[in-house]
Amino acid sequence: MRPEIKDYFKFDLTSTKISGYCARKAKGDALLTATAEREDRKKVMKFYFATKTVLVKKYEELRWQLRKVVYSETYGDDTVTFESDNSSIIITAPLPQKYVCKDRINITMHCQGFR
Image (cartoon, rainbow, N blue to C red; front, side, top):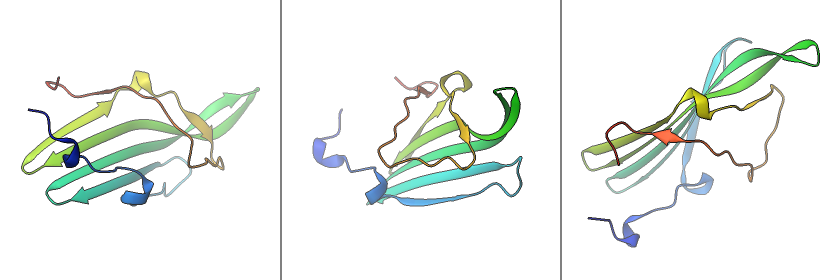
């Protein structure tokens, strides 16, 4: 049975709590987490980053790389989790790169046993 439209709630920057941690060294990992909760429903999106040395125009450059994205939604005692696989993420950028709020990414996420 599909939930009614009134059961849905926003999941964007204005309705979420943002948390995470930065890489402690040049070749470290970082995590950005967005969480939204309403009554007994919770949505969480996690972005896992790493740094990687990439060859750019004959020079090695240290860049950040989006490694994995995980989305989970909990309703009551039930949770479903979707993950990206390595083949769907090909995003790297220089470390000082800045993005505007309207930037978007398109990735494929999977959940074993969920249709």
